[in-house]
Image (cartoon, rainbow, N blue to C red; front, side):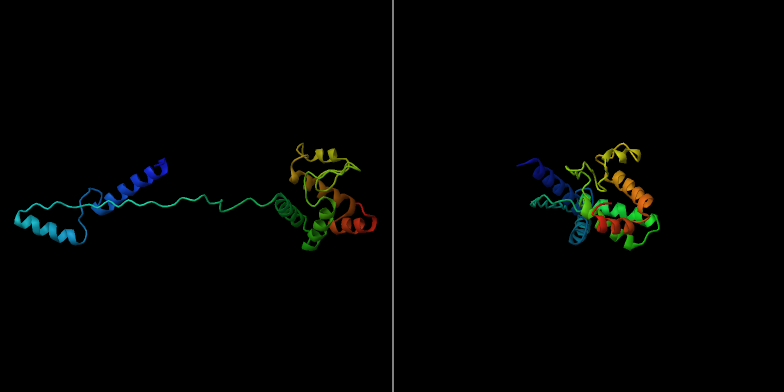
Length: 171
């Protein structure tokens, strides 16, 4: 018998004794109350009976109810919040999504062997993102903040950057 079943059986016994006897081990509810009162009047002794049932249940491991969303989804959600804070429209986010899906597929560890570009926005060189925060190599939020600043400064909006990308195949 494993420790879980011992604990389960002990808890079941305590609960059964408490429910049946109102916490004292004596059954007062239902049919016992009438028999107890009749026995007191006649002077007989009534011995209350408490039945303790033991049951077992199968315990199966369940996955957590809420799993963390994939990094790509979390990155897109963060970028969407920043885009709306810039008072850009949903259309601007669609342009940004198209741009960064083509550039890195929203992978914050994406590295272009040919050019040396790094991260979600494919910064060239990647160390430029360091002026936003020192964790630019592994933090997608730092990369997204840098990428949106770059896009706003150079193209005015994500759709401006996406239009340039479609014309020149780079931004």
